[in-house]
Length: 108
Image (cartoon, rainbow, N blue to C red; front, side, top):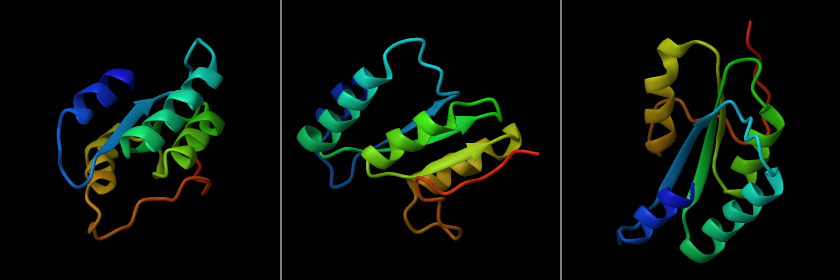
C-alpha cells in the first residue's frame, strides 16, 4: 500500500483509488496498516477498496481497511470472478454496484 500511495501521489488526476487484493493475513501489526490507510486517505485523498480472497480470509481486517479507506469491500471465493470484481470496484458507473464495506457475503 505504501508503494501504491507513492505512485498515485505523483499522478494528478481527479480520482485516485487503490484496490487491495489479499487474504488479510498481514503477518504483522494490523494497527500499522490502519495508520497507513488513514494517512493515505487524509493526506493523499486516495480511497482504498479491498478484495478478500477465499473463505479463510481475515474478513474483519479487510472490511475495516475498506471502511477506513472510504472504499468498498468484496469477498471473492471463485477466482473466475476476480477480474470482473476488480473492474466493478474501479468503475463507479458499473451495472452492479460493489458491496459497501461491512456488508456480509459468504463463500459456499
